[in-house]
Amino acid sequence: MDAPQLATKAFIGIGQIRPLGAAITPEPSGGCGTTGGEGKASCGSSGGPDDMPQEIWDKVKNHPCYSEEAHHHYARMHVAVAPACNIQCNYCNRKYDCSNESRPGVVSQKLTPEQAVKKVLAVASEIPQMTVLGVAGPGDSLANPKKTFDTFRMLQETAPDIKLCISTNGLALPDLVDEICQYNIDHVTITINMVDPAVGEKIYPWIFWQHKRVTGYEAAKILHERQMLGLEMLTARGVLTKINSVLIPGINDEHLIEVNREVKKRGAFLHNIMPLISEAEHGTVFGLTGQRGPTAQELKAVQDACMGGANLMRHCRQCRADAVGLLGEDRSEEFTLDKIEEMEIVYDLDKRRDYQDKVETERQAQHAAKQEALSAQVERAGVDPDMKVLVAVATEGHGRVNLHFGHATEFQIFEVSAAESLFVGHRRVDLYCQGGFGEDEQLPSIVKAINDCHAVLVAKIGACPRDELKAAGIEPVDAYAHEFIEKAALSWFADYADRLARGDITHQPRGDASIRQGAYTSEAAA
Ligand code: CLF
Ligand code: SF4
Image (cartoon, rainbow, N blue to C red):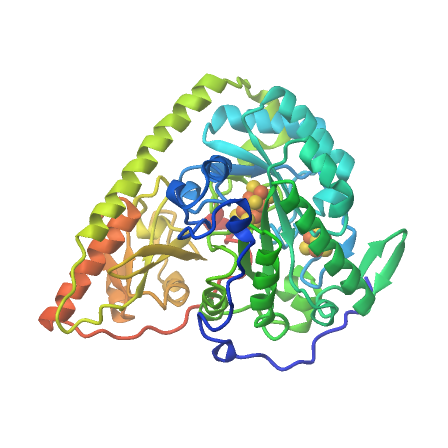
């Protein structure tokens, strides 16, 4: 690896970011506008069938990354068939999964296309809500085109109902757009961290281009041009594109607003701004030089400043390149090659469809419950009608508050007001309950992770963590156990506003929260 060229620029405070609304003049075209969604409220990750044309809704409705609503119900899987990469990012160490699309940790098994297809069928027969196959590394999907496209071709012949998805750095993309269309790959993610090579050269020390290594500004310029060209070509062909950007404080934080604007102009469907994962033990350039990742508030501030531009995805889990399951869970250990050999694989399309019909019914019930709770909201004297608060939610899927506090390895974060309950992120935590007992030393780190929240909604919680959360100013709430999340959050909000109006409590602002870096602890993952 070439010696890194690190940023000397001072950190740009999030407070210096232009305020919401002032940041971006929405472009007349791009995003959903290019596909007929102009003037619709939102066709982003939280959008629904009323927000976008039917043909787009059909593509996203059961893709857990392209629809926030779908991510509570549908699963994806990745197959690690793409080991090589054609560029170097300062946040990546080849010994680890692609940091763009994965949490750090080695890929357990690299697969041949034949092994990958067998694994997909095994997962599809066990997890009927698995609807999407992605190739997301551990290198770059399009730096390994034969392996990537062979996998998709073979899978299409055996399991045509599974959606195909790739993630790429974009360098090879323009040369492969026709093949992407030939294999009906409907969803393509491009990682775009800059639209200015002067920013890019602080992130990419080199690229491998036309049989030679190119470094510095020139490398970043070529990469930028290839990314923009690839995005435009995909848009012209009607392929849905998602842009992933890694937020690197002091290097591209404010610049991501410009990235958002430029990708929207070129028709990107979604923009996913993710926090830099950077720890010395990962051996990345940024990890070794102490480049920090953003705090929760810094991440949210940049995401909020981009609202009005390209639609935002906020539910990304930075998955492993061999992840299996709902976003936020990892069942890859259940599907190792040894275990697959022992399994009876029955790919039953009717069974999968029946299951997915049930999921749709549940999802519609979730949507209806939210609408009902929204229509029940009222204004209260003495309570700011624009008040918004964050609540943390313990869930194991199905869109419900259905997890014990002590069993949570992540909390979903919702921003709630009288007018909305919106998913705005997630926070990984160490498991509180290990071996049947509460681990009190874990509590401070859990509090730190949800410190910006006013309440935590759980299915159940023990007396000890309950008291400690209260002492930290976070209200533990188990009154809405097993209810749909948005309805529960809105019901809690109504109760909170009632207590404010009666003068039982006063509204206190919360502090910042820290984003957990890297993997779960082994106990947490067990
Ligand atoms: Fe995989 Fe990526 Fe396709 Fe999803 S992941 S290739 S679009 S199927 Fe999703 Fe994972 Fe985030 Fe990626 S949560 S890292 S955005
Ligand atoms: Fe690593 Fe992905 Fe960057 Fe390649 S594109 S260096 S695999 S993060």
